[in-house]
Length: 458
Image 1 (cartoon, helix red, strand yellow):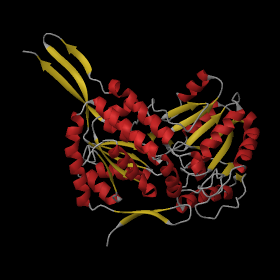
Image 2 (cartoon, helix red, strand yellow):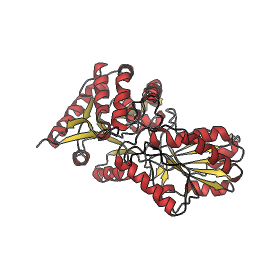
Image 3 (spheres, one colour):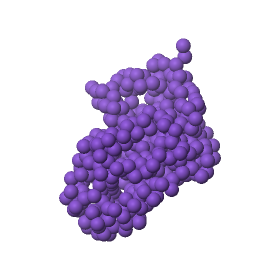
């Protein structure tokens, strides 16, 4: 019996897309073709690879009117937000812009006796395992620089966004990237692990759950395959007494609720200086009560369903447990909340770090808010987490913010903004968020290896 992957739409529970799984032998053939094609791809001039990637990105943009409703059907993001092409293009374009400098040879000497230098050379075949929550932007973080650096790419996308990898590969092929150089595959977890264990790839980049990251590490054990892991977060915001309150509330609540809270760098816990706490909560509740939960195909909808009922069930469980333990829920149940994927947003106070909602990744439209007496208490609470992806600080004092940032265990610190990925900065994390670094010059370094040349002249 043919095994398939099925994307169940959160809109109505229907099967929106279905694709047959590759067997392990078929998947190994994909790798073999990628390995062979990579040799000629790496020989092409860097400028040619850059332009082909730029053309591939533009080809994806040309499909945006088709992609936006597809995303709504696959993972529930409202069409009013226009998809992901802005960030997709920004990230890929930046990596293309810096490629010549980032990949340049490091010249040590070239004199009468020796020519010495360090080159950046591609790993070979790069596997990209991408998530469903921002499926185009998370994939392009690695796809663009990997191809530019001379690697071939095999892309495996999440079942919830089954059509994304297919769309990307078709667009890049249309732009002139050889089919064997960029391949999209449909495989299950077992086949993915078997491919990694067989040393099929020079580098694997995975964005997803902590459990998924552990599975990747287990599969790669003993192979010495390079891994880049971004495994989510429990990102905090800290609002100091001198903050612009309106800006802080607007930005942090949007950072908590946008995309139905399904963002690895979304805000999941907020600490507010005592003098601002009551007003902050009041304004936050006012914003969230004005949201319109509903069908993401409706232009009026501001909050769509979560991508799957099981994700919504976990958020409901965290909220229910917190309320049972004394938390105060400020948002009533929306009429459109069906007990399934359509979930009411929630703001909780009287929370503490004994509650799962303040410790486990929620990945949904809920945020807990606590008051704090001073910076030391806020820092201790921000660091009291198994995760470390981003943190958002709100103050008018940049020196204070930098001093606090130095003490926070995280990958990125924002001041007076949140929930954004700057492609010029390294996207990285610590603790259970994983290890690695995407985008920026460091992203190119992670997608290549150094090779030293010590040439003695006759």
